Image (cartoon, rainbow, N blue to C red; front, side, top):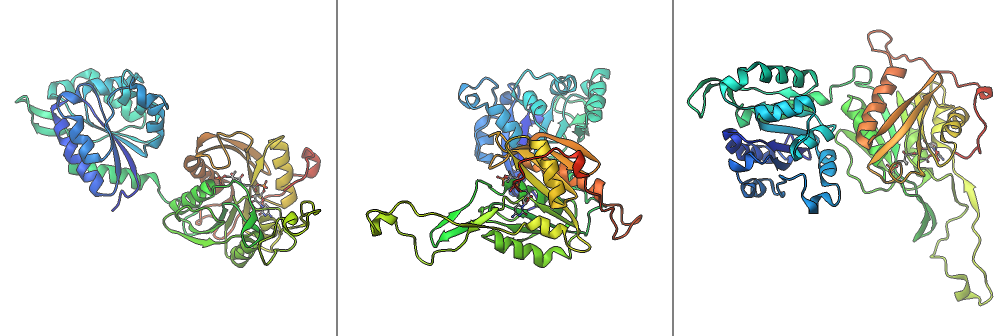
Length: 435
Ligand code: PMT
């Protein structure tokens, strides 16, 4: 199933071809896609929400002012949910609104609010299609990056013959599949290279039932592993416990503690071209793990106070990789709550990293466990902001930046990369010095 797990938002606007949208939903669902349908007011004259709801398995939305759905900003949620928006049929009126960036209803608002690619299947009377205004709008939409599929030529419902028939559902299905394929063209700078990503938290056992850990969900690291695999790299994901499914085409090694993560990374580091440390690794572990569950001290001795805990330092996983002879490009993450940029610049230098990605984890909208992130990528000669976006989008953007910064096309410099010099400490603001 080529569309398995893909979120497709199908917009249906008011034309006679709307009846074909039911077949389209069926095709998309049969390919494994999850489909949500949004109807314009006009579309509801041609096809009923009940039909599309039954076929898609989701409630059909048709109102921007639906009080229940909008209580949780439903249109923004839906805009973020979509991996792709397909408007079929797209009337001349809908195209005109989209070309102008107008958002008078739910569907046009979603198209404007979403970062997902938008595919349009125009359908209208042949004279309307050939009209100069529609042609102007079609050209504007194409220039804005919207993809127009069709229209086909032939006999029309009104009896006219000419261009304006909506492309058949089978062609639209193929266009959707092609859009997903072309979204992830292999990056020639990374294709075939070995990339290792660490992700998730580590757990440092106190006894058989208790551990020290943190709030990392693994989402950012898994998204980076996926983005690297989409770019054509051979990806190994060394993951702490987080319960996420392994991304396609990624070899996952599951570990629990920092020491296990250290060993898994060390064993594979020499064969990597790029190592990205996204894991929230515990800096310290209990000096000893109690063989049995630690008893409440007072249960044993009435006068006993709380037990004290002795910690020892864990090895620094990515710093150890950066120290290797012929080290791969090593990129770390910095989870900061204050003085983010200066702390991260210092951290990059101290760990000998080629680059570091700093995110402010005091902001609950980003960082730990959120679906979104915002960060700054810092390397020896520059910095670039990665604005607030989904972790998946940030991952794709980061991988693109790393490919451009550290890897040359194989035809120019096979197996070579410029190892960047660390920023001189004198140009780095002092920080509190934690890892
Ligand atoms: O998992 P999510 O919920 O999606 O959240 C993502 C994230 C917030 C965990 C991620 O974006 C992030 O910031 N990861 C780094 C977290 C962290 O441990 O930061 P740090 O500043 O403590 O460590 C700096 C770097 O050293 C990191 O690359 C870390 O992987 C690495 N490190 C740290 C300690 C250690 N012993 N070995 C290491 O390799």
